[in-house]
Image (cartoon, rainbow, N blue to C red; front, side, top):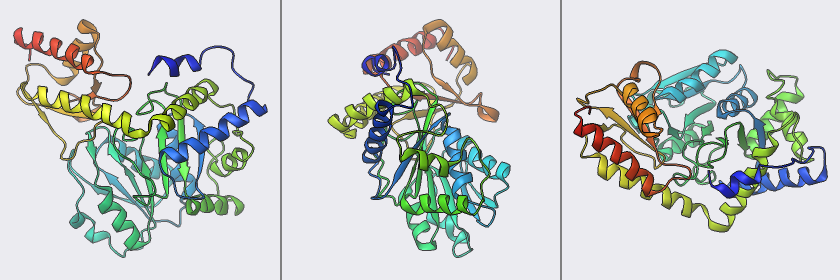
Length: 352
């Protein structure tokens, strides 16, 4: 993260039950809604928790056991949405996609006019680097009257994201991805329809949440407050980041990220890896090992321990064949140079 944003969270913190803090929280909501181009009447709430907390909060507050949900499952984060539905006992069906493969209209044909009420998708399946075609998903949802919940934590500020443009009813974000802030804060952005659903369920006593009760969060947000102790320092850093974003515009961050990603992808072609996703986000490049001398987990550890370079490993059954290189945050082309210096040395040693 940029040093100016980091320093904003250092020092004495304001007490949360003050006008000073309430004004900051209300400004954060206003700036965040502008940043994603949320439709009129939208609301945003802040959760002290990771992006998964926002995903679970959105799913379990917007939907109930009377809903039928579709989950786009093309990687570990799609699987996470499915596991949240399992845990909450919400009826759902998974649209299973091979890792890195794009969703297509023909895949959705069997789900037409089948009474589904909600669809859950990670706009960027971060585990594989795939950016889903949201036009196809949006059109399907509109045609079938389905409420669309999109996790945009990975793609926000790495790729263009327009909540109004893709007709998303609810969006989840987290602090540590494109916003490049410390982890520990997540956000749920709701259009009027999604917010009304939450209030309706709560008024009927249909709630499965205490800490993650979004109806309570919406009510407290009217006062510029949160139901429980918030991540104050990160909210202050978020305020600085959103103010800078309003001044510069999102295109500056997206352009810088795209340049770093493009430079990396051009240069990695000289190494024994395959870029494995069909439609890449600027945020991350997934590398499939193609005859590489060491497994992905070993390369991750070697880069970390011997060169001080952090990449992103993949968990589960693909841990030895996939490695991800991130391009978001306070990075420059010089960081690419450092990585390729390391890769060149490893190649000279015949380790890759």
